[in-house]
Amino acid sequence: MASPAQFMTQAAHTLKRSLHPALRYLSVEETDDSLIISGRVNSYYLKQLAQETLMPVRGERQLVNRVNVVTK
Image (cartoon, rainbow, N blue to C red; front, side, top):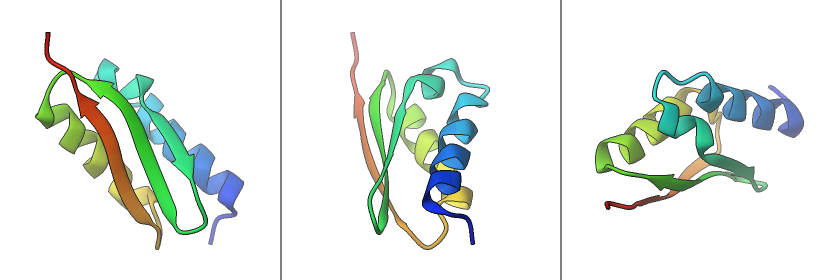
């Protein structure tokens, strides 16, 4: 299993490689048992996409989606 530092790097790198530019600006934080994504996007689709993008790299940790949808 990856160390916490490797896990964090992998999760952040996964978002940075996204084909959707909005996902590249989201933040990833880690606690002992959670992976937390936060930031702002302009649609619920992108919020869900950010979550689904990180599901494969979360390991056994809970994924907490704190991404806010902000419409103009």
